[in-house]
Image (cartoon, rainbow, N blue to C red; front, top):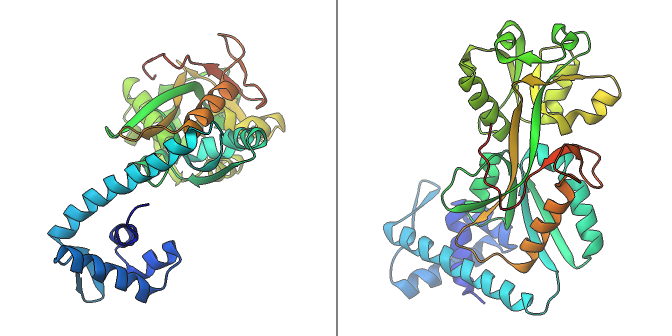
Length: 324
């Protein structure tokens, strides 16, 4: 549908590399160069500066990129809307998810959705909440699932359910003997933290600040960029962590880790996000609705999410509660 030269230009502009753009488009580098030259001839303007083995967008290139993104997005929406008229839930579905959601919640949801709709071809990008939102802003994803709200005005957010964060430690750790722990008691122990840009870390830092504790005041012994790495460090008794309760269900059941509620508790929202200006396809809408049903508790109190075996709290899709 969209001019092939525009698609190639967009890829080169995003990668700032003819070689990487060719790999992404399954084209040879000479073919990519030919398409760019044709587009530059059409505009009678240089779109890239090429010097010292590097390329950069010219002022004309920056204008062309802004329009290329709009044209390619509208082309994709047209394709989706026409296909939606057929009433079938099918086609490619580009999903992004933060590591906690991707590791512990989304696999079961994706499996069940794929079983119900065999014509869907899902693709999953995993990163922290910041990385997922950036991919959405670049229109490289259809929908994302993150912890907390969106930090980008260009993205719309729809809250799905709430999730409690708790202190997690090894069975022999001093905190393991407590029934609950106040934020002030945490400064006495070595702390294992998530990395900057993590939605989990953002919620924890905000909680500590409200409790009168500067996050930098904690005795941070190490940072880790994934829940699995964090659990391994905690199990090795290198310190305590604050993690989603859904991420340690198996380890707690096996006696490898202990989780202790915070007083007051930390509750954060799990959120679906998607580009605000893009018309949401029937496929994306169907998947978000399906995910919400799977995550919702059977009643207003805490319970097990259907088919997932993990405790979450239900949040009505129309609710707009503030995060703790």
